[in-house]
Amino acid sequence: MVTYPGLPAPVISDWLSRDASRSRYAPGTTFQIGKIDMLANTGTYIDAPFHRYDGAKDIGDYPLEAVADLDGVVIRATTRSGRGLDNALFRGHDVGGKAVLVHTGWDAHWRTERYGTGHPFLTRDAAEQLVAAGAALVGIDSLNIDDAADGTRPAHTILLGAGIPIVEHLCNLGQLPDTGFRFFAVPARVKGIGSFPVRAFASVAT
Image (cartoon, rainbow, N blue to C red; front, side, top):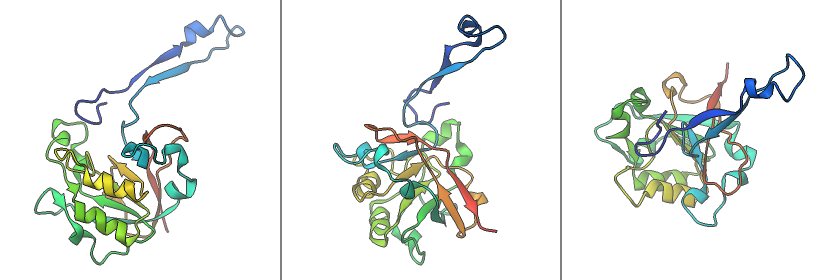
């Protein structure tokens, strides 16, 4: 499974296979111990400031309340005139203290060649608007929250510079209501790394 063009897919293997484990345990008792050789930016993942800034807070520094049980809002951007999503998209929405999930519908192209090219992204002024409005977390169902062709990466720079977690490669945002749900994107508490996969999910109020 390739998440990002040019980056390697994870390799999953046995460190200890069931056959090899037979000599270590009692007759009839076997175990498997798996091994994963994987980039941290694989699948749906969360970014910490250390991803962009040397010496900044890393994945292990996120307190649980920063990545779990967040009040959520979905911003719909499936009908758009271009790839860049600017600050107008967020006008009239209460995003303060919330997980702001941008629904572009680009996840429909996941695991196809198209997913890696021409993807929607947030512009610099959109990122600035989200910081000014006090967003708690920003996620998107796209290849990158920035234009992959823009080497300055303004959305990453601005959001992570403000300490706002970013979650990329989300999916199924169309199944969520606009509001009335809690969002979770909890990584393993790993030090010295700027990104890590998450099992992102939402709990919808009934």
